[in-house]
Image (cartoon, rainbow, N blue to C red; front, side, top):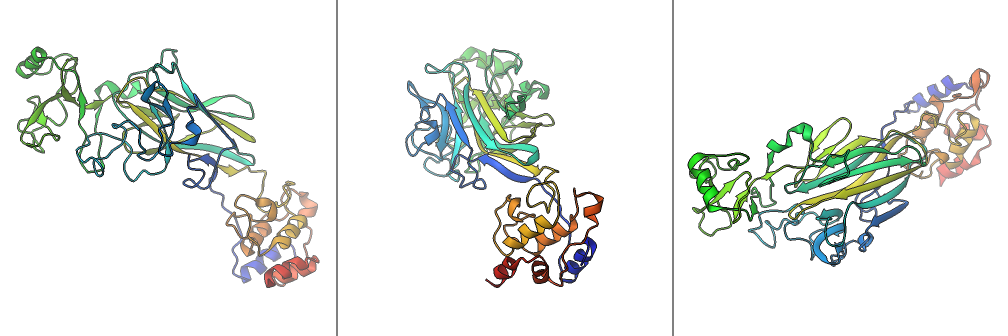
Length: 434
């Protein structure tokens, strides 16, 4: 008869290392593609409000649009499907080479959620979505979401009822306290009023943003006397990259056939004709520890979820109030660690690692475990029940059983087959010979 230390020694002779190191594991999520993009996860439930057939996605038809506002959207869109606002899609490397703005490139062919001018004739206030996920058996939960946004956004105070451009993700576990791990808004702490940012197109060029605001008299004053008030020169008015003179109020116009032409351009203003303005006032995805500026390139933002339990309810609410402003998110992923009470080697979940667990492992030995399904002996979640799992059981044998049982002997093995034979577990031999 061998004790735990003797079994570990036998495993070492067989070339099996004992021990176990847990890492944060993807356990739930939604990719809006039916689980094809993001680890195969689908939520227990999913509800969009207003719906507008949002749960169905585009499928070639712009179903997430509001009935009376064809270019105002909330819901699941697919790639560069027809009916999407022209300014949302980046066709600079595809169907329309002169395109100068967009988030969704030709390589983005899967589904995502888009918000575009949700404050309109058909809707007032927040649009919302809700998902539920099974997170039972895990702790140290985190949520990750992919974000992109483009436009000149307006500030919102998350503590006030008068929201302009704002979104957040709120979590509740088993009906407990609601937390807000992620907020998306103009982050005043980042001095956002001074932030100008670029839109990098798929073609490799940098976007310029058209505004229909221009007044001849004010423009002449700007040229003659320099920036006044909130008016500032465009960041590309730098004398480089085809610009004739730095800080003269003009930059090259990429859409004109004559590349030597320049267009009046500045950072901001209140004019009444046409100009090219820089993108400014970006959205930030804010968590408890970080503030991430968003632009046209998708970025993953991760935040902690405070509680643990069985069912995670994730609530989204958002409002994008204005044209030429787009907020997109994709690939919601929930990760976590097996809760500490689920000790590696505890196959039956009784809080102990003993001969009962060895019997379960032996009965399933040689089979293909279910990722995350420790009840059949796949302790390292590699999809197989093998000597690595036996090593994990051996390393933790006696846990939770008290000092008497912990020092008790386990059946004598000379190999894995003898472990099974000593316990009368013929199924081990059958599985290994199969």
